[in-house]
Length: 259
Image (cartoon, rainbow, N blue to C red; front, side):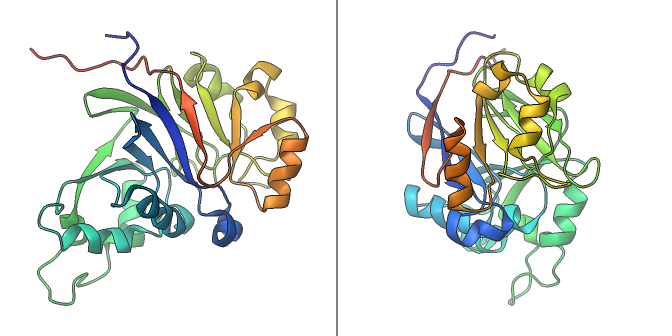
């Protein structure tokens, strides 16, 4: 089925800054909402997790991990404590991780010895860990993932909810990818600073590599300061600010049907 999925869909930003700006702009993290409720959260930075809990009054119930830099996964230790020590939550928080990212994620956050001082606990006991490939199912809907250009091949991925939103995660420009994964008019939440570097896009990079139609659909985040964000806005681009929520088109993602 590819009919639009009923409901009011939004993308809410819990943070928009790069690693150096996370203390003031929040770590880059967002939640896809359905009818005002969190549906799927993207990443789990420490500052972003704080903002999530402050807004919704509880911890995330489902997350997608783009990559394993700490401004994107630094909230997992607290999330472990929330989930593991609550019998109602233990093992029920879904964590979707691209298969090639999973070993890195485990090395960085899951491999600490004796994660609970009392013993008897493994880090992943707190979660429902799901290794994924080019697509995965969440809440009866099929989403897509795609590799992006950030540091080393196979270590960073974006997310697509078809017909609704594309989240690039941290990346250099990826025109060849977006030609295919953003071909249905989706809002494109894109890594962009005022000035690029070898692992992140700058606005000059996007202007050089993306056609105007694509730039018009871009919503920029992961910049270095509030001043840089305002400079991007003065150049005529949409920027996300911490706490902003943007209306999304209803997804056209495939839906599971009962046999």
